[in-house]
Length: 274
Image (cartoon, rainbow, N blue to C red; front, side, top):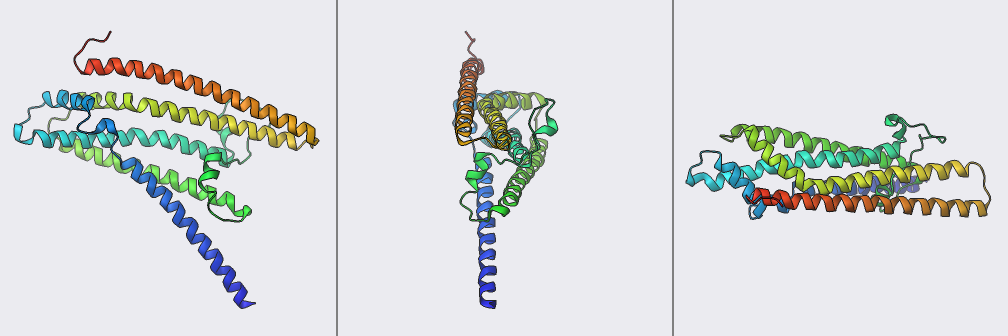
């Protein structure tokens, strides 16, 4: 009996260790992703070169440290990029959290004819953690721990980036509010597409949550199999319709963005926009 108990305890310990290692790996991968330099902040990217040249032309710079100053500006731009990027992902992960904790009703002014306190984790989170073997009754806590840790990591990365940014700008001789605005404008234009993509995802998470809640509420009415089948088809059809409409709006936004960005690049290059 003792041997069986020991084996059982070892199995629990191994599963717990594997779960923590997997979650740690996912968070580490995110950290690596955040630290990457996007193509539009590479020193050989032409639009970024134009921004750097415009910035440095307003500062008295000796030829000997010109390249070093370009590198410093790139590092400042990278930190600004992270400071803008992380809140975008924070908004997404807080939406995951609200869905899984049944908290959408807390910041909604609308009143629904069905309860809004169901705890439903989005498919994305379920998919990420589906590789971990764990008892059904422990899944909710596993999802809570993972999403909480992920959000906490995002917040820590944001704070670190803000501190580093403040330090670097103070040490950069000649750094002004005008330079900050120029870099911000350039970053906003490049992050616009991602921001729209995340907003699109968030809307679909909300919509899927409502569909799942309606299904659960309907099942409590004890419908027969035929009614269940028809209702499921209706929900799926409605979800697909909403998804297509959202994607259509998203594509239109992207088209508008690329058109305006193309004009902006011409302005950066000293050409008049048409």
